[in-house]
Length: 449
Picture 1 (cartoon, helix red, strand yellow):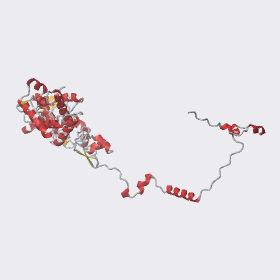
Picture 2 (tube, helix red, strand yellow):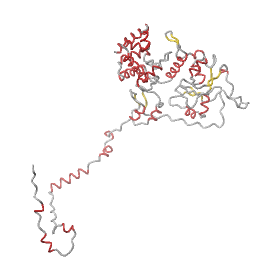
Picture 3 (cartoon, one colour):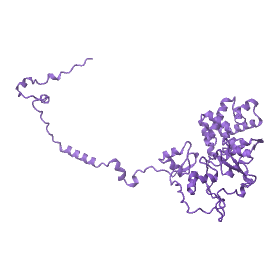
Picture 4 (cartoon, one colour):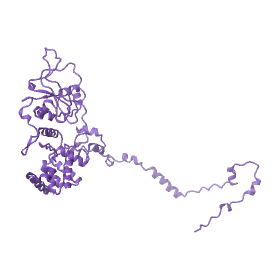
């Protein structure tokens, strides 16, 4: 549709061309030309009614009485003021928590939170554990002032018990001794790992000469307790368990003789004290943590030594309770698409939900996974699993169960593969004890179902 055009405004404008001849002979600016000959009259000032003026004054007074929003809290009585969010004194760990996430949630510094709870960045936390959120973190001890004269040596070396958060350098500073002396007295190095409960020598002990004799330049002779001991120089590729097996001594005796643990880093050229018969420990203290036989089978010394190392490490580490481990296994199974009742049946059968359990075959933790099976499980899930970690241990066991179910002809064969080995079951069939294992797993699954 065509829209009618408006009438041009120029048609209604007054004609002014005739008046230009009467203007003075002065060059006018464009602005002057553009202005009309006479200015428009100013608008008349209208008087505001009295009632409207009163209303406007009241409105202005009301605006002046409004209190700015930012000052409301300061003008309210203290009982009515909004309270700032407060940090609770403690917090109970739930599944999926990390120390850094907890610190972020409560606007805390992660390092302060670690120090407050005597934790380190590698400490394992678990559901149900309670940590402190408020309080004063222990401050590192200041180095003791150097004594004016050497203190008289005692017959026994002073020792210090490691607590969570300790480092060798901090222990040396705390006791006012050089770090190199701590290394020397304890056969440690800068890469050695220490753990809570470990005893560290903080003085030489037993090396002081008689008062009338000058200090010898060479180390003092071994004490009688070490008379029947020898030494061994570590070579590349050595492990503590292999050295103990080669020299015919128990791993626990070798570790005690050298004040080391299963996690201590050893290095080529380091000398170890090798205890002789009856040296250093009473006979009752040399019993290994894990025996070499189980259900009539005797396992190779190297395997048993590794099992003892893993057992010692788990004994020195915090682990979830059996009830907490049960929850971890069930949650892991749900997440990985495996029946929780079946995973729980395996965990109860294998260890009774004990993460510190280690067998002579070096089957580790709640799901009793041997290292080679742990490597297979790592390949299945696409990341390196640490069988000593309770969550990774559950993940390894559940991953193996899932793979066995997917590649076995039926559930009974899959269960048998966890106990006897899938290849062995396929080649030889189920052994009698394997058949009993399968029935036990199925019975336990019914109780959890």
